[in-house]
Length: 204
Image (cartoon, rainbow, N blue to C red; front, top):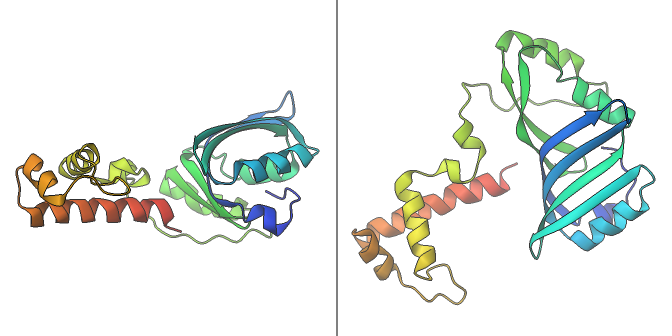
């Protein structure tokens, strides 16, 4: 979003999922909450140096994943991008996913007849690639939502038994016994669930 930063600093961010946002016209500020995979120390240093930053809070989830709440001055680039989606019958479905300085992935839900107007309103200099047009399936946009109930049960069971511990403390045989299925079936359940989660986590 055109924040001045060296490439080395931006490389400290692997992925940012913007979960919610608000434009405050009266205060001329934008507020947003993101889930970020990256280095919080590097991002904190960057935020300290940005003149348009008003407030930020970083809350760790683990060593390299954290929530970031930000309030900063409303810039023309923010307005230009977000107002392009401000059309009757269309909504942005969170999260907006940033996978680099130049790439943002957005899911839009609404009236198909409004889509051509949306594409016409995208600012000059911003390229658009429509990846998929389909009936909306909300479950496909979340990690856990990609799993069947049986796959989710298998993951929960494997976690409880220490199958995902490092080093591993639970065996596939124990998982299968708890699920009341063969080891082959348990392995298939776990591998299918893991593949769905990996695809959701790193898909571009």
